[in-house]
Image 1 (tube, rainbow, N blue to C red):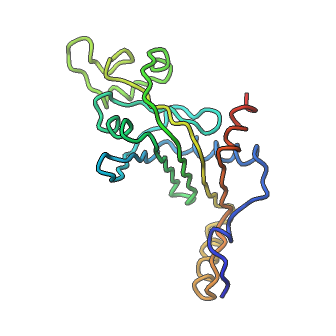
Image 2 (image 1 turned 135 degrees about the vertical axis):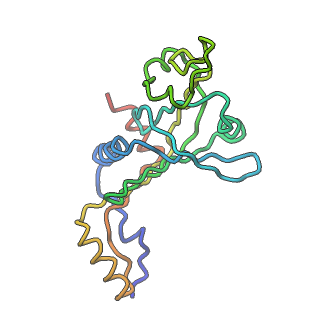
Length: 195
């Protein structure tokens, strides 16, 4: 039995930043919904499913929210958030740690607005609160990423299952796919260099 942790066994420190960012973007863009985690005033963590409306350079994200949502109270208390993405068909996952701010930019709201949002806001029938792009209840949340961790399955499912069974028998941790970590430096480089 070895002492190698799962992280050490799977951590990829050889891929260049551009390759890792492209892979990260592909993962995030392929997973429509994030679990958006905030901290409540009592210190408890709470997560809710939110659709990523736009991913921009450096793995920063835009989300649409209701100005009357309790999550805005959480963000006023502590702007640090985590976004978790998971793809069940491949077991690929992404964890983005960052800070969030509420943005009330009508032009950006109109840019990101999609008709499916109307279902989440409803129509109060007053001609103002209609769930449309000009509804005053709609605001945006911008998350600036500080670090990203992700793992992609590069082996076939049978091979991954073999690795897990082998690990169970031998006591060695399975090598299921490369684990990648991007810190503030790598994300800032991506923000500067990407077009």
